[in-house]
Length: 225
Image (cartoon, rainbow, N blue to C red):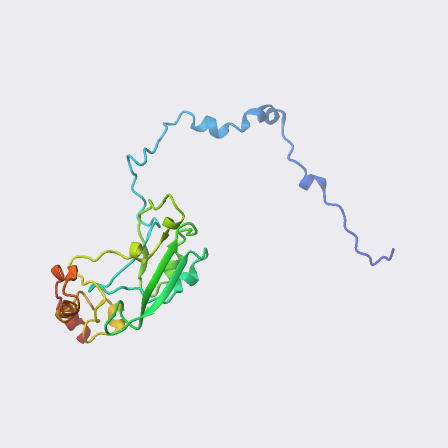
């Protein structure tokens, strides 16, 4: 064997061998595993009586997703699919649609035509809401989302889209006159205008949101600024 051949010495057995215990430690070995049991045996038992008594979740708890709206009722989702790309569990499916003058569902050119979240895959990591550029997708504190069937655990847009708040106008309808999608993102639109209400009344006279829609004049001054 050449003298240049590398030689590997055996490590010191004391470094990798089991820790040696004294006689008292060896005597207590049989009961050492019950340390946690003995430390908690005299503590009061706390039982969560769910579902009869529901304990509120933490304020930042990540639960059921919601698709939000702007103040005039238009949808915030623009169908960009960034949430689907950010999802590590591949639980989100988005299909975008094109807005038209007669079918304007969101500010800008596109809207989320199809939106699905598979809660059998979702890990509630919140990556999707961090990726959303318009804050269209947020997470609520609702955690009761189980179901008896696998199909029922796939929530679609109808289940995720928040209901109309009082004063909002049900889309589709045109954007507030004189505004751009950037005005919507900045919060300059604070409610439907009279022109939007008149458009819905002309095209969908039976729309139930016309009964509660309230025209707002604030956005005109905000946009002008």
